[in-house]
Image (cartoon, rainbow, N blue to C red; front, side, top):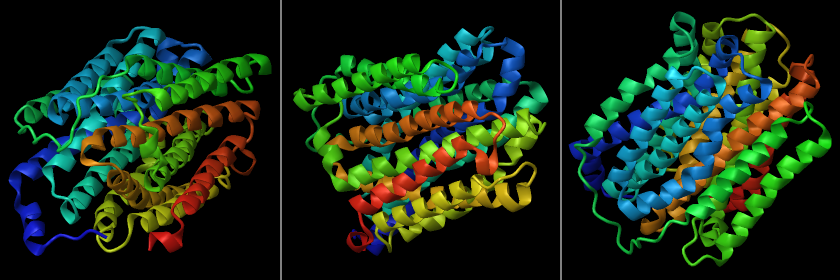
Length: 463
């Protein structure tokens, strides 16, 4: 386990420049995380206003995730090639334009396109931000704490997005949820433009960006998510054809990366057990968490008659748990191996997901509340641990690419989790709680993530 001297730790605490950089980066990842989950409580009002078809409504929910996941690897390559600060500012600007477009959209198709632009901006921003943190903080305790705080802000944003989205939708309509991000974007751009350029990483190589591979993985993921999401609503042959085409495109992408001189995804990096465990953890965990939030928020509003605000407040304890426990969890990483914390966090998330499957209608205090608290606590522990493992697996010149690969798995898992949960639930629309196949699928995703990480970084090796 890496340690730092008391002098280095003190420098971390009082380095105004480093803390200013971290504050700007955390602000950006906070509102981008909010946009991931807020859509769950906006969909009912969007459906009433724009009258989209069921397929279009699903695309409104998933377009952000698909673009985010599909373009993250390219975003990581951009950060490695052109520098973290420049790419970070560009990504924030793109996200702001997508938010403005979503607020002004007058039909469902334009809203879907705007959501995809939002996702593209987030895909550029996230890996660049991690590269800036790595360049701004010395290795060891200072960097671990900074990464822990940054990771926690993304998780807090994800958890609180349903609350802010529900409040704004209830008071001012669904468009206000997108308007919120426009002034925040301007603020981050103003502050971020004053940040210093970090020194270039030793051994950094300006590799050409394989744009064809980026389009291949984005298109493949989009087809796979769209196909899986139509389970129960379309003929089996059609579902298999679309999902199969997406899976084939992703396999072709991997084959291309294996032979490429400058791959978008260095397969040797993913072969590292620490990197593989981090990807499996965030992919599986967020498939379950995102899918469950989608199903529960939809059930509360559509079947139980809750308002958007009430549905959003139902998830507030999850955000509170993340916020309260994230800092202690980051400090704990200084004394315990990240792999051990990752397994602990995944176990708590799986317990919360299992509790979701027992939720009968109207039993918030005895079922939904403890489930939300468990999931939030698990995220607070597992998320920063996964980021630390991925950062340790990558060299200084590949931090942006490693971050892109990690968050790609997280967002791809979220997109597939929503698609699987929605598809399975549509086949049994009257079932919720114990009989809900979608919620059981969400628990299965979290359980498989825990099992996979236990194999990749078993407890006896994590100590």
